[in-house]
Image (cartoon, rainbow, N blue to C red; front, side, top):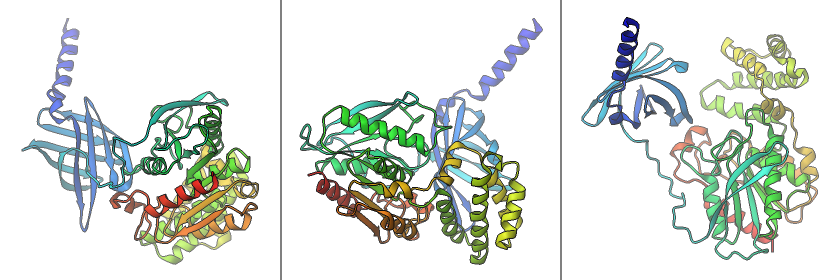
Length: 451
């Protein structure tokens, strides 16, 4: 009897921690002041669970622990970041203290998520039809779910259609990033210019099924190939093409090289081997963070050599990580502080099917096999897939040149937005989602090669 009473007391105490929690349910956002800088934070409270977002750092859905949620008090902990927040509801705001590893600061939260202008985001009603569809990758029976958009002047059996393939990471059909929906914007523009499109959720994302954890670029190419086959088999369209962004742009090269598509549009598609892409990404990022140029040069030389070892060692790279990094530093005569050496070791120990495939895959052979019209473009401020070296590889290896467009857009970043530096931190604050010039050129190219 006493045991049952103890159980009851514990349950009552637990319920008290979350009584009237509905008042604090929802998203709460505020800016954390860090001296001369500030950082946007969002806590998403739902029932007895919680997540944290850091939009400025493109980090969303970080697992958090709701220690207390009453009608007027909130205590949240984020164990993996050693973060805690304690606040009280005062006049419609939650006023409290943020703590992380000895750092403390006042943090005031207001209800809702931060609002960022996205002036190009298409809003209904649309002057064209859309349809929810699914198709299946026959290799593993993954079901991909997407939106098929018909253009305003759709002609059955004649209208061109383009399959849209997202960049790396598990993304939804709109390729949504930092409140931008570039694929929704592109699909809308194409529909207004006589071109149909199919955009779909990546495997394991939202309405699509399939194993994402063990997938590689080759897996995603198979998904896209299934999408192209679906568009051909339903018999509603004329020529069938593929538009891919970033990794999706590389998949465009793969499937065009295999003769799976009538035309391709590669937006910032990588043409260099994956390890070269990653080395190229590090330089602008480290320089933007104030790392001395000499140290950046040393690190990138060692990183390039280390990737060579990782490709050569394969699955045993984890065992030889410390030795391989020491050899890479020695061979390149890199002078690196301990934190950068540790970064190299951690990279050497990274083990995932996608990563192992990516660093060793070289698109050149597929590019050489392309025999369909191609549009391959980059922005001059792209810091993720550097424009000059990648476009040079494409130009030098194309065999089919009659209808090709290979171009660099001055002042555009990896998302094809007008930018200042091209860094990832700018994405959030840029209102433009896709440059109108790029949108216009995509539509013009597709209409030109599908007449």
